Length: 536
Image (cartoon, rainbow, N blue to C red):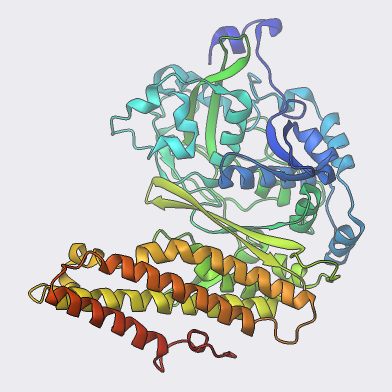
């Protein structure tokens, strides 16, 4: 880091404290956007609708950090019974804000020379040799970290506003993918394994956050009885009672000491270099990222929101983001967790009482994941699914049948495309020529169009349940199936328009359309596509 900014006289140093700086974008109850400091977020939590960061992952990372502060300040329920009281009584977070403000300023200085907040000051000696532009800090911009590729974009001098850099740092700690860092490990106190980046604790799985009508309610829903009262959170790599790993050999995973430690774990060694912006404001102009902590996580203790899924090999693991399967197709697994869980977040959600004051769902379960191709981050995936206490069984049935119906329609669209190709071009084998088949395959239009009807289906089930309907699922499912069927027919007709306007083309169109209609009315078709109710 620049000597003038970090090691010179105190009056020359740049400092920045997120407790008081407006660093988190939010939405107020009247729909306006604003920025709040950490203290303000906690003290005004029930006056704010939601956190509104640039990406889903960044929003989750901020919520995780707020949870860590609550655990560290002992502002959290001590039992499941007290958790329900917190929800009913709408207990606030003013005490957490007060205790946060009482903490030493040096501990919360993002640019403190010895213990910079959330960072590893041991990387300072390597900043001149290995530091890069700020793109490395942003998961969405960095690409993979491999130091053997020529990544000119990592050398660009694009300073970041400090608030944005702070949020990006939190996201790196939670979601950063594995890879190889752009740091040699030759700096004082480092070692060869500082370049071996491991997977962040939330990367590779779907993180589910229960959402309420306000930020305060969201925090209350997701806080839980901690393992130990007032366990300290991770403030900096150095100056902590937590024994950190070294970088001379492969890291040995450590078990989190408590809930505050877990939700603020330093998944990366990060160092931010401050500078003066063109308007005199403080910015971050260089960053350095190396290996961080590796945690030994227990599914029941440390992954309370994880949705169990049985993989093809029979292994049960948390629901993971998939580049080939839309997240909403597995929403039934989430409702199954609420319906069947004996402990954890989902059991607590099931224990809530539901006063049917309106037709909208009182809560939502927001699922977020990072799609990555090995060490290359690709995109965020997310879905928001309504939940009302007492409705888990109905929502499970609706989401499962909704998934089955959508997948069957998509399967039938592919079958129709194969018939069209084989009749229009008999010499081409559809199974061997995906490029030709893609001309007639309507699935790629169908899948994006099916997501909104699925979300509408779940909302309609909640609405029917609010009206004390004995069967709030069957009619909405039939309507949903009809919407998918109509959309699929339209997409298929559009795709078949590319058939040649000759006799063979007309035959191919007729047979493809007939294949699809036969699939929709055949015995194998889900009952809802035939306008009938199905009870699983």
